[in-house]
Image (cartoon, rainbow, N blue to C red):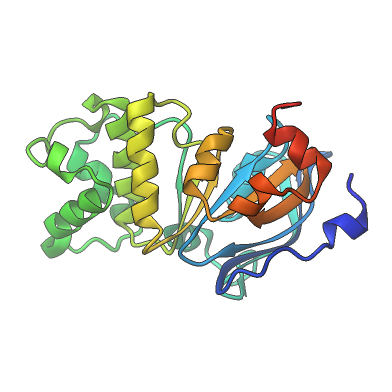
Length: 266
């Protein structure tokens, strides 16, 4: 585990901060997988989380909308604040929280029995907040925001599972955007996609950060460098370094960061 001195080194102070991670520790059973992570997630920007397999990247991002606690034997300590409010507070409804903090997963997961339209509307139906008079407006706007409308506007009644892999992932993004989140979490959203589809998702991320706060886990350091404003490097459950992306990749403060981004391990 890193020394207290290194963990307490203040990161850059992006302003304003949308999500604040403070001394977060996480476990699966008796296995501690995050060791006191403290970092900010800046509003309307992209924060990348990088590190080798098993370092705690996915656990960290899943802790930001309380999905970690859904795993058997999982628990968490510390504080995660959205606009200054602790999301683990007793008065916070996790279902409503996940409407404010959406998630896009590694493998595209449109609901196989649903049409493109119904996939987009599924989150609103789940929370009971869908107004029938606005349904078509919501579908079109979410698909436009996900850069998918022109490709599927004549296929809204077709099964979402019939789209290409890249289209399915953008459909999942549209599904998240339909509920008007403030934060969008992406856990390896391009790892199952080909280079062309990956490029489309990266272009979309650049556009979305004008309106949303985005945190993305990626194993692809080139992708992190291309899409993010800030980058956090995790190793064995510790936050080794957090910085502006350009600084982290060109002038890392920690030798382990330099070793990782130059391919000496990982």
